[in-house]
View 1 (cartoon, rainbow, N blue to C red):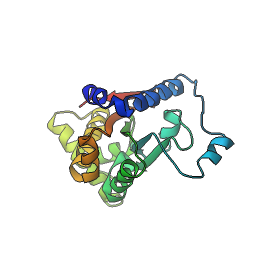
View 2: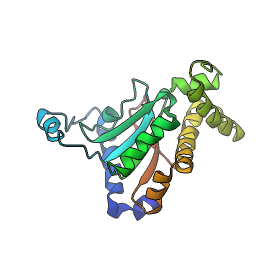
View 3: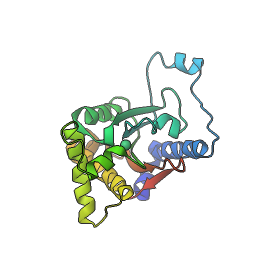
View 4: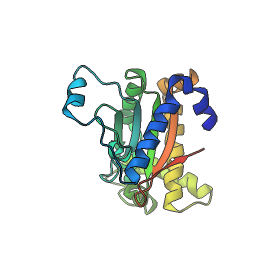
Length: 201
Ligand SMILES: [Zn+2]
Protein backbone atom coordinates (compact mmCIF):
# COMPACT_ATOMS: atom_id res chain seq x y z
CA UNK A 1 0.00 0.00 0.00
CA UNK A 2 2.80 2.41 0.83
CA UNK A 3 4.39 1.72 -2.56
CA UNK A 4 1.14 2.58 -4.29
CA UNK A 5 0.81 5.87 -2.49
CA UNK A 6 4.38 6.86 -3.28
CA UNK A 7 3.89 6.15 -6.97
CA UNK A 8 0.96 8.55 -7.24
CA UNK A 9 2.35 11.26 -5.00
CA UNK A 10 2.73 13.53 -8.00
CA UNK A 11 -1.07 13.54 -8.20
CA UNK A 12 -1.33 14.70 -4.62
CA UNK A 13 -2.82 11.58 -3.04
CA UNK A 14 -0.05 11.28 -0.50
CA UNK A 15 -0.55 14.85 0.57
CA UNK A 16 -4.34 14.47 0.82
CA UNK A 17 -4.11 11.29 2.88
CA UNK A 18 -1.49 12.98 5.04
CA UNK A 19 -3.80 15.95 5.64
CA UNK A 20 -6.59 13.64 6.73
CA UNK A 21 -4.37 11.71 9.12
CA UNK A 22 -2.99 14.98 10.49
CA UNK A 23 -6.55 16.21 11.03
CA UNK A 24 -7.34 12.97 12.86
CA UNK A 25 -4.34 13.47 15.12
CA UNK A 26 -5.62 16.95 15.99
CA UNK A 27 -9.10 15.58 16.69
CA UNK A 28 -7.85 12.68 18.81
CA UNK A 29 -5.73 14.97 20.94
CA UNK A 30 -8.53 17.48 21.45
CA UNK A 31 -6.88 20.07 19.19
CA UNK A 32 -9.32 20.23 16.28
CA UNK A 33 -9.03 23.45 14.31
CA UNK A 34 -12.54 23.31 12.82
CA UNK A 35 -11.22 24.92 9.62
CA UNK A 36 -13.34 25.69 6.58
CA UNK A 37 -16.52 25.98 8.62
CA UNK A 38 -17.12 29.72 8.52
CA UNK A 39 -19.44 31.92 6.47
CA UNK A 40 -16.75 32.80 3.95
CA UNK A 41 -16.06 29.12 3.26
CA UNK A 42 -19.76 28.37 2.89
CA UNK A 43 -20.18 31.24 0.42
CA UNK A 44 -17.06 30.29 -1.53
CA UNK A 45 -18.60 26.92 -2.28
CA UNK A 46 -21.76 28.24 -3.90
CA UNK A 47 -20.31 27.79 -7.37
CA UNK A 48 -19.39 24.15 -6.84
CA UNK A 49 -17.50 21.58 -4.81
CA UNK A 50 -13.97 20.25 -5.15
CA UNK A 51 -13.58 17.84 -2.23
CA UNK A 52 -10.10 16.42 -1.71
CA UNK A 53 -11.27 12.93 -0.77
CA UNK A 54 -14.25 10.62 -0.67
CA UNK A 55 -14.97 8.65 2.47
CA UNK A 56 -17.21 5.61 2.75
CA UNK A 57 -18.06 4.97 6.38
CA UNK A 58 -20.72 3.55 8.64
CA UNK A 59 -23.84 5.65 9.22
CA UNK A 60 -23.25 5.34 12.97
CA UNK A 61 -23.83 8.75 14.59
CA UNK A 62 -20.57 8.42 16.52
CA UNK A 63 -18.46 8.22 13.38
CA UNK A 64 -18.80 11.47 11.34
CA UNK A 65 -15.80 11.64 8.97
CA UNK A 66 -15.66 15.45 8.85
CA UNK A 67 -15.26 15.61 12.62
CA UNK A 68 -12.92 12.62 12.94
CA UNK A 69 -10.59 14.06 10.27
CA UNK A 70 -11.10 17.68 11.43
CA UNK A 71 -12.25 18.89 8.01
CA UNK A 72 -14.84 21.44 6.98
CA UNK A 73 -17.36 22.36 4.34
CA UNK A 74 -16.49 21.11 0.86
CA UNK A 75 -13.51 19.05 2.01
CA UNK A 76 -14.89 15.52 2.06
CA UNK A 77 -17.42 13.73 -0.12
CA UNK A 78 -18.97 11.42 2.47
CA UNK A 79 -21.06 8.38 1.66
CA UNK A 80 -22.41 6.48 4.63
CA UNK A 81 -24.41 3.32 5.07
CA UNK A 82 -25.18 1.07 8.01
CA UNK A 83 -22.24 -1.30 8.36
CA UNK A 84 -20.24 0.56 5.68
CA UNK A 85 -21.64 -1.64 2.92
CA UNK A 86 -21.79 -0.85 -0.80
CA UNK A 87 -24.90 -1.65 -2.80
CA UNK A 88 -25.68 0.16 -6.04
CA UNK A 89 -26.43 3.65 -4.70
CA UNK A 90 -23.27 3.76 -2.57
CA UNK A 91 -21.08 2.46 -5.41
CA UNK A 92 -22.51 4.98 -7.87
CA UNK A 93 -22.03 7.82 -5.38
CA UNK A 94 -18.37 6.90 -4.94
CA UNK A 95 -17.94 6.63 -8.71
CA UNK A 96 -19.40 10.12 -9.05
CA UNK A 97 -16.86 11.50 -6.59
CA UNK A 98 -14.02 9.90 -8.53
CA UNK A 99 -15.07 10.59 -12.11
CA UNK A 100 -16.88 13.94 -11.78
CA UNK A 101 -15.42 15.58 -8.68
CA UNK A 102 -11.91 14.25 -9.24
CA UNK A 103 -11.15 13.05 -5.72
CA UNK A 104 -7.66 11.57 -5.54
CA UNK A 105 -8.25 9.52 -2.40
CA UNK A 106 -11.08 7.21 -1.47
CA UNK A 107 -11.11 6.04 2.14
CA UNK A 108 -13.11 3.05 3.34
CA UNK A 109 -13.48 3.64 7.06
CA UNK A 110 -14.66 0.97 9.51
CA UNK A 111 -15.01 1.62 13.21
CA UNK A 112 -14.73 0.07 16.63
CA UNK A 113 -17.91 -1.34 18.20
CA UNK A 114 -19.84 -1.39 14.92
CA UNK A 115 -23.39 -2.40 15.84
CA UNK A 116 -24.12 -3.67 12.33
CA UNK A 117 -21.07 -5.95 12.40
CA UNK A 118 -22.03 -7.21 15.83
CA UNK A 119 -25.63 -7.86 14.74
CA UNK A 120 -24.46 -9.74 11.66
CA UNK A 121 -22.11 -11.84 13.78
CA UNK A 122 -25.01 -12.72 16.05
CA UNK A 123 -27.32 -13.44 13.09
CA UNK A 124 -29.70 -10.56 13.88
CA UNK A 125 -31.65 -8.09 11.70
CA UNK A 126 -31.76 -10.55 8.78
CA UNK A 127 -35.36 -9.58 7.92
CA UNK A 128 -35.03 -5.83 8.34
CA UNK A 129 -31.63 -5.24 6.74
CA UNK A 130 -31.14 -8.09 4.29
CA UNK A 131 -28.68 -6.29 2.02
CA UNK A 132 -26.58 -4.87 4.85
CA UNK A 133 -26.49 -8.18 6.68
CA UNK A 134 -25.73 -10.06 3.45
CA UNK A 135 -22.62 -8.00 2.69
CA UNK A 136 -21.45 -8.20 6.28
CA UNK A 137 -22.04 -11.95 6.40
CA UNK A 138 -19.65 -12.42 3.48
CA UNK A 139 -16.97 -10.56 5.43
CA UNK A 140 -17.71 -12.60 8.56
CA UNK A 141 -17.44 -15.85 6.60
CA UNK A 142 -14.06 -14.75 5.29
CA UNK A 143 -12.89 -13.84 8.78
CA UNK A 144 -14.00 -17.19 10.14
CA UNK A 145 -12.15 -18.99 7.35
CA UNK A 146 -9.05 -17.27 8.73
CA UNK A 147 -10.12 -18.33 12.24
CA UNK A 148 -10.77 -14.74 13.25
CA UNK A 149 -13.92 -14.09 15.22
CA UNK A 150 -13.04 -10.99 17.17
CA UNK A 151 -15.33 -8.10 16.06
CA UNK A 152 -12.29 -5.83 15.59
CA UNK A 153 -10.77 -8.34 13.14
CA UNK A 154 -14.09 -8.69 11.32
CA UNK A 155 -14.31 -4.88 11.02
CA UNK A 156 -10.83 -4.83 9.47
CA UNK A 157 -11.55 -7.72 7.09
CA UNK A 158 -14.79 -6.05 6.09
CA UNK A 159 -12.82 -3.01 4.89
CA UNK A 160 -10.64 -5.23 2.69
CA UNK A 161 -13.78 -6.92 1.36
CA UNK A 162 -15.48 -3.63 0.55
CA UNK A 163 -12.39 -2.43 -1.30
CA UNK A 164 -12.11 -5.70 -3.22
CA UNK A 165 -15.80 -5.62 -4.13
CA UNK A 166 -15.58 -2.00 -5.21
CA UNK A 167 -12.65 -2.73 -7.51
CA UNK A 168 -14.35 -5.85 -8.90
CA UNK A 169 -17.68 -4.16 -9.55
CA UNK A 170 -16.69 -0.72 -10.74
CA UNK A 171 -15.14 0.02 -14.13
CA UNK A 172 -14.73 3.65 -13.07
CA UNK A 173 -12.73 2.79 -9.96
CA UNK A 174 -10.59 0.25 -11.84
CA UNK A 175 -9.81 2.73 -14.60
CA UNK A 176 -8.71 5.44 -12.16
CA UNK A 177 -6.59 2.98 -10.20
CA UNK A 178 -4.97 1.79 -13.42
CA UNK A 179 -3.87 5.27 -14.46
CA UNK A 180 -2.72 6.13 -10.91
CA UNK A 181 -5.25 8.92 -10.50
CA UNK A 182 -6.84 7.34 -7.43
CA UNK A 183 -5.57 5.92 -4.16
CA UNK A 184 -7.80 3.55 -2.19
CA UNK A 185 -7.15 3.60 1.54
CA UNK A 186 -8.51 1.29 4.22
CA UNK A 187 -8.83 2.49 7.80
CA UNK A 188 -10.60 1.78 11.09
CA UNK A 189 -11.63 4.39 13.61
CA UNK A 190 -11.17 3.67 17.30
CA UNK A 191 -13.87 5.31 19.36
CA UNK A 192 -11.79 4.59 22.47
CA UNK A 193 -8.81 6.66 21.37
CA UNK A 194 -10.22 8.87 18.61
CA UNK A 195 -7.43 7.63 16.36
CA UNK A 196 -7.78 6.24 12.86
CA UNK A 197 -5.77 3.07 12.28
CA UNK A 198 -4.43 2.73 8.73
CA UNK A 199 -5.01 -0.77 7.40
CA UNK A 200 -2.70 -2.60 5.01
CA UNK A 201 -3.81 -5.53 2.93
ZN1 LIG B 1 -21.09 0.79 12.37
